[in-house]
Image (cartoon, rainbow, N blue to C red):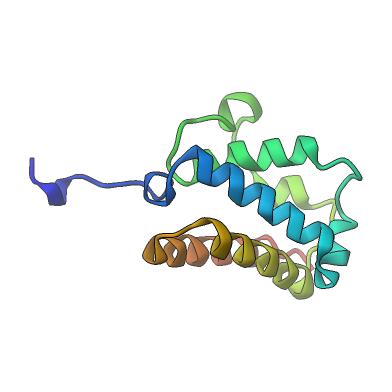
Length: 130
């Protein structure tokens, strides 16, 4: 086996679970404080504790880390799980504003941050349902 045969997950590239935890915490802090995120913040419960935990588990698994989400919740079915909420272009943009700011603050590897940003951008775009 050569070095080129080994694939390093984005989870490992960004620093693992500690980085995911900081990323999600900063994401929701931004959602709580940025005026541009007011609409998407209103889509969430007042207490963000549970949803933070869910997003941490989801992103851990989605980025190639341990399977923490699917063992409890099954297949993500993200669009289906979010259909009860109208998600348009402005909502996607507000979500990405919060996530990109959190990425800047928590992911030090520039290339890994760009790769994760691209993947999250595709995901956010796909989540639009209005």
